[in-house]
Image 1 (cartoon, helix red, strand yellow):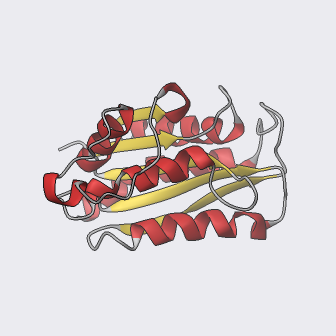
Image 2 (cartoon, rainbow, N blue to C red):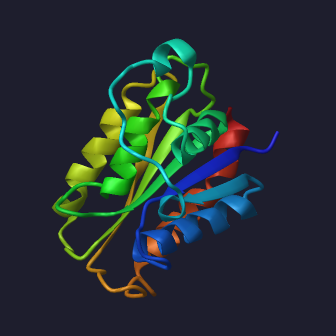
Length: 186
């Protein structure tokens, strides 16, 4: 069976550097025979979690917006890929809001078993991504059947398109292609 990969791209800029990283990962995953879907959060209308916890009883968020659909797509994926620009040493607000809205997945029979972080930042310091990675690791740690598969970081890129030729693009592509090997080892 083909592995289902869901890429959640949180760049507010069309063609942004983290989105370009996501496209590279997607290309490799498709070549590995995976089904790949990319959701661009900037195209979705979703609000903040209200903290009501009703989702833990009903299995879905009570807020009637696109966050419900995105969480459902996350539920049905085998692999989650979170692509984000690094803002103030963490994930974008768009991604953090969606991670909070994915709370109905916590006590569900979700499919995903691995999650990746693709991040781009103006800072070329590898420490710049640590906060973003900690956010994703913290989210993944709440799901017993999921493991954090790794981070691919493109530092030193700020303006749209500056990522062109960055070694992280090939790393993302290779990580996507390697999903074929993961499937064969299961």
